[in-house]
Image 1 (cartoon, rainbow, N blue to C red):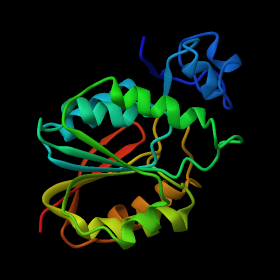
Image 2: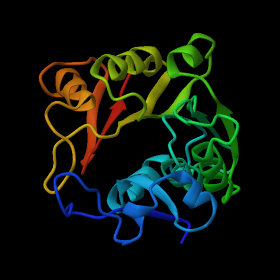
Image 3: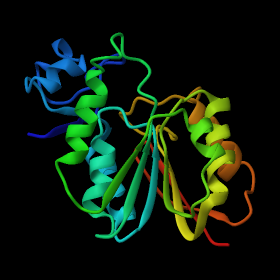
Length: 218
């Protein structure tokens, strides 16, 4: 098994369930690197399938927040053969930057499929945005979950998305058996932008588990 996705409902209010008993004991990414567990997704099987559907045939894709690389793998498996997937993550949380097992696991997971091209940008998203000058077909926002950080990612990156392109917010809605709450930064941002307010040129295209997908019409 290359990766494991979250199972619903959760077994408790504190534990996420991957359906593999040893995962709670082997959470550190070093265990994935050693082959003692698969790479862990931070999303469900339904969300994984949604990443693939929305990525299908798209040529320029950007993911903010990569973790162990499972969502990036879903995008790469479905994007256009001549597409490019840009993965933005500073991988700054490792206690040992020289080893950085999360980065190693992510690169191995994404590299397990060879469709298109992958460009790794090891920067914080706001720093990467300063020099970005390319159009985007699909934008996945899954980095810093603080409300201000999510809104900053939206403001920094959404104007690069072309008409017909999509932006996907992860951990952005409440759902039965899920892990999100009304206090989550992504939940607050999408409620303000797309539910309680009106963001011109953008409409909600799909909602599934914690994902909210918005499409640009103009």
